[in-house]
Length: 290
Image 1 (cartoon, rainbow, N blue to C red):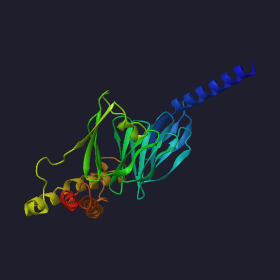
Image 2: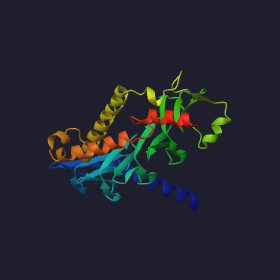
Image 3: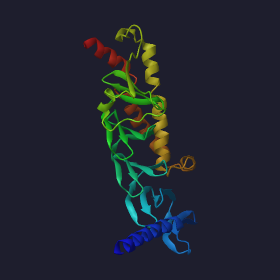
C-alpha cells in the first residue's frame, strides 16, 4: 500500500512540475523580456534582450551582451558568459566565446565540452566537431564516435559519409538504411555487413605535381579563401550583436571590429592544412615523399 501511495505521489509531482513549466509565458516591457506564470505573477523581471525556449523547461537568455541559460523558475542554470548562442533541434544549445564552442541540453548538462572551434549537426543523430583543424563525430549523448583526428568529414547523402584521414578519402555507406547510423565503436563497421567501406581516388589520373601549380592557380586558390573568411566574419559579428540579422546594420559599433575579425578569420582559413589554398600542394608533396 505504501508503495502505491509513493508511486502516486511521485507521478503527481512529475505532472505538477511539467504543468508548471508549460504554464510559464514570456512577457515584454520596454523592449525587454521576462517570465510570468498563469496567474500573471512575475517570475523574472523584464531584464533580458532575448528569451528563447529550450526544450520544455528552460530558456536561452540574452542579458546585456552575454548569453546564458535560465529555467522556468527564473534560476540561472548556465552563467551569462557566452557571446554566441544557437538553438539546435529545439533541445540543445550551442554556446561559445573566446574559449570555443560547447553543447548543452535544457538542464545545463554539458554534452560536448567547450573546446571545439565548430559544432554542426549531421544525419543519423551525430554532431560534427572541429578542433585545431581536425574533425570528429559525437552522438547526441556526448559519446565520442570518432575523435578529432580526421582532415575532413562530410555527408553527400543521408546514408553516406566521406572521411579524409591522413590525406586519403574513405567512403562509408550504410547499404541497409536510408540514414547512416554509426555504432559507438567505429571499429564494428569493418566486420558488419550493413556497411560498405571504399577508399576513394581524390584525383583520378595523373597526380598533380608542385610544378603544375601555375601562378594563376595559386592566385585563385588564395582568392577562394576570401569568401569563407567574409562569411565567418559576418556570422561572428551578427552573433555578437544578439544573433539578430538586422541589428548588425542598425548599430555602427561593429564597423571598427570588421577588419580585425576578418583578418583573423582569413588567416585561419588560409593556414588550414586540410582545406586551405595550399592543401593540394602539401598533399602532392607528401605523396612524393612516401
